[in-house]
Image: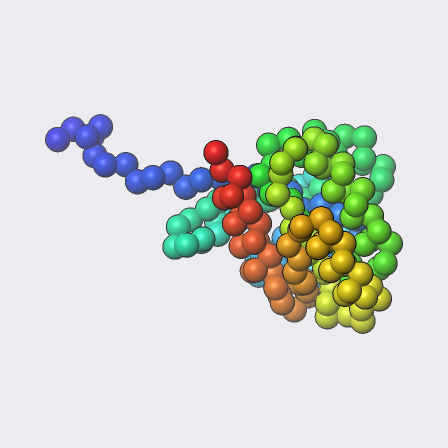
Length: 177
């Protein structure tokens, strides 16, 4: 039996996923918490885009996520669209202590859906370890009206972070052709 006759293990699928939302909502902190297990108190603004890869196990099978952290500041808006192409799932992140970050979600949703029609979205309320300023009922109403799944996280404590990235992986798997 030659080398080419060896059975090949199936390749681990790789999915591009986007984490988007206004600046300061904790996107980078969530990604760092998931990928390194650590929370960093200091905040350095993402310039343009950053990405990391992480393997998630779904139904006892590995799925590799290429996680794209999109800068939320308006000054980066002109070139963000180019980073959305090829995404299989998107997390729209807002800060539960910042009502403005929630009101921005429809704009993020529209901007991304225009570039990647049919992409699946997940809405994430971050910073639940702090005092909530956005009524949960308000975000639930918006997510239900748009048929979007919703969950809450804290990058600081780790609450919900694993479920968040597993949810993105599951959404990405549902768009697999």
